[in-house]
Amino acid sequence: MIRKPGFTGSQQPASALALSVFFVFFLAFAPALGWAGDEAFAARAPGDLSGYLKVDTINPPGNESRGVEYLAKILKANGIAYQTGESAPGRGNLWARLKGGAKPGIVLLHHIDVVPADLAYWDFDPLSGEIRDGYIYGRGALDTKGLGIVQLEAFLALAASGAKLDRDVWYVATADEEAGGEFGAGWMLEAHPEVFENVGYLINEGGGALKMPGGLAVMVEVTQKVPLWLRLTAVGNPGHGSAPQVETAVTRLLAATDRIARSPFPPRLVPAVGQMLRGLAPFQEGPLSGVFADPQQLVENEALLLSLQQGNPGTHALLRNTCSITRLEGSAKINVVPSEAWAELDCRLLPDQDPEAFLADLRALIDDENVRIDRILGFAPAITGTDNELFAAIEAISEKHFPGATVIPSVSGGFTDSHFFRDRGIASYGYSPFALVNSERRGIHGNNERISVENMEQGTRIMIDLLRAFAVGH
Image 1 (cartoon, rainbow, N blue to C red):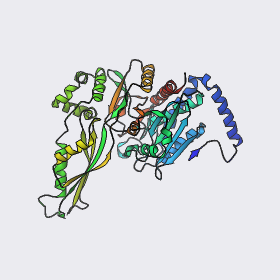
Image 2: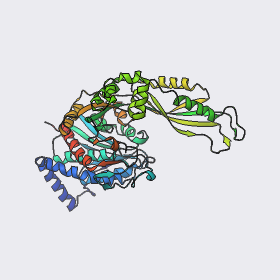
Image 3: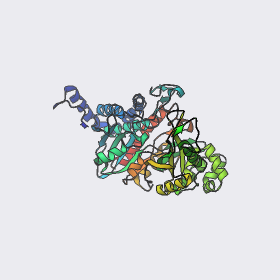
Image 4: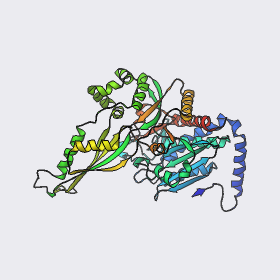
């Protein structure tokens, strides 16, 4: 459905007419206001995020339509038309456009859903949106409601400026990223392909500036490991728990998962990871500086690789295919030997890995015809190059706001919705205009997730500058 704020029936009420007159007046003079006008949007970003964090969109079940309602109210209050759609009951998505010229458009994308949080391990209510000691606290502050609000404020500031755009700018908020994106980005591409018809670029989660001992590095995600989620199902003769058998579904499953856990896949240095590690080398202290400067030694020295895994498992995971055993289930009763037992594996493949070849190797490793492998989820590998106008704009804006910082194309060990759009030929980057230290980054899917007020305000300024540099005609 399309909503055009300000209209009730066929006529506008007097209050809406007055607001429209004011809005037209504001648009006429906003370019002259310059930075002062932008500051209003930066200043309100922390409060808008606080309100967004109070909206329960924990997935499962998602209920992203609640988040859509919240964002829609802000768009409506600012006179911006928008559209919404549900891929399933409660699974809401929202999109809005600032119309521009014929150049390939850009999408500002974030996901509305957030992962669960265990209140027992948090120091505050994960849905409180509390602002305290210079931080906004809540599940989704970093992943990705904070990014969504910064994108929204920049989108609104661009609209209020009255600037002539040489390309369309889209604001898109989707459901279900935390569970694979089928009800969000995937649904949008199938149900509303018109949104992406003349889109050439997309900014999403997955990057950001890192504060390290050696300085500041702006990470821009250009590719990611490819998820391959699998279920192993072992079968065997059922029976009574009081009469142990030689072999059962459970013992077969345990043997299969033990082989996987004890047999790490061969390490390899793919070009994108090598480029990223060499870019990070100047920011490292101690031995890691030399190791990152020559990362090939990591795949040639098992002891060095093990040391990296113990101290930095995220970076280690970029050097080989991986499988984590995350779920197990056997019998429903303690005294019953089941006919089936299953385990689920979160496997992540290097960007150049053929999934079918990997599955063949996994079957050979398990080596048991009574253990079946079923695919739960899998994507195609994709990478975005850096030789284009959006990456150049990110570099220029990063130099303006973080003088002397290095912009580094990066590889993500996790996955985002960007793969949907890379598959369609849209240049997609993981880029968040925040500067974080590692202790802050640990809040992503962790406890006490938070983002600073300073990051929200500065991030809004950076995103406004980026949109102006990239989308405003010169």
